[in-house]
Length: 84
Image: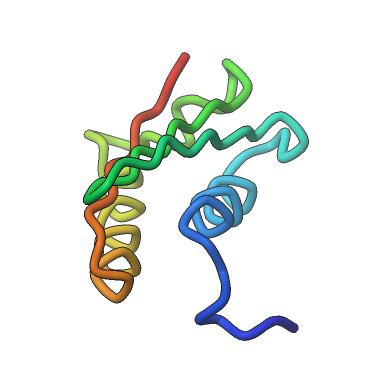
């Protein structure tokens, strides 16, 4: 297993999303890096959209909290967007 410090934010989001969905092969994460901010765009199969968002957005809020904690270690700001 690789060193946890070496995992990228993109890989982290992909790992979390694949664990939640029924079609893990259809999980795609695009990374748009700026100077201070990294925007991660997550695409999943249409039928898995609800699983990633969760009831009242709880699942995506939890994913964003994990992402913010991981990005703080890298001294960057990360945003997670879920695209349809």
